[in-house]
Length: 145
Image (cartoon, rainbow, N blue to C red; front, side, top):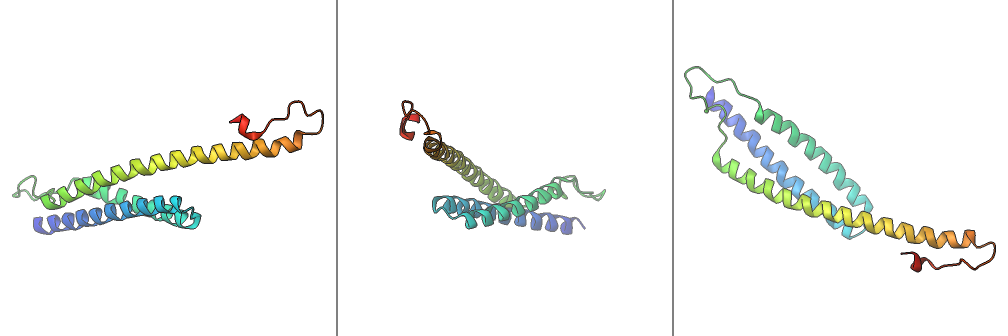
């Protein structure tokens, strides 16, 4: 029974590792979509990221849940996950954190760029709509940045 529980937990840990790596690939795909100005690819990647994150959350809950141990078994036998999986998960998690930081910075920079462009175009468009009187206050949009 304990061997089956450990095998199940190792299987779940393996799936967790696979999902972490898949999420890392999706972050890279999203960054490439932003760089390539491919909105459809970005939207697809975001949807996939949401699905992967949901599944990762579910797996994490199962892995954190205490496992019932047999009275004669060692207390940590049911909770044990293969050390190799643990190391690989830590490495994948660390890589995902680095990618997530890059992704967040890219989104932040892109958001600022979009806001600046929108401001510039709104200022430019606004001049012609408001230019119905004396043109003493007429400024170009580049002067307003």
